[in-house]
Length: 228
Image 1 (tube, rainbow, N blue to C red):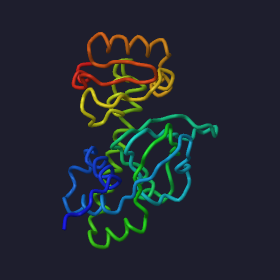
Image 2 (image 1 turned 60 degrees about the vertical axis):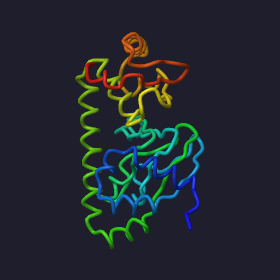
Image 3 (image 1 turned 120 degrees about the horizontal axis):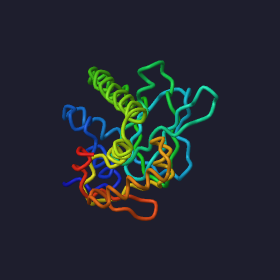
């Protein structure tokens, strides 16, 4: 008898499939992670975890976005990234001191997937190389964060804007669901003035790379970012 269609399971699988790291993993590991993940609804403003919390469990974004904050030396929190569908996050701290390295807050109503620590450990007992694959994921995220800091420090305004728009769009097909991001948020992420961000977005719109709307940006020709 055919297995009944499960919409929640399908949306988890689709979110995993959008992640480049996940698609490179052995098929057996892909199946185990997808089977272990549960789909959860999260209201805007929900705090998933704080920097310094015990780092247990893996998160991913199905729909919506999540704000990532870093704590500054003065104790204030600065927005460092906004992650969207297909992003897997929350496990780097498990490999580095077992504490959360950043804080994660749901930015707008979202659906997430979550794998509890007990399920991760069950997978690891059957597939011990899981930890090597997770270390690869953490390393890629560290490289991306470092590249982001260098780009924000030294890159041209168009490079800074392109970096964040590309990151939030992920592997989404061109012309699909828009990136829900205001110019104020983009200015905070890039360290640019709102006026400069507005100018860059107008330039990208004129080049046919993006379309802009109220509080959102739709990718039209993502490959053009490589020429920015």
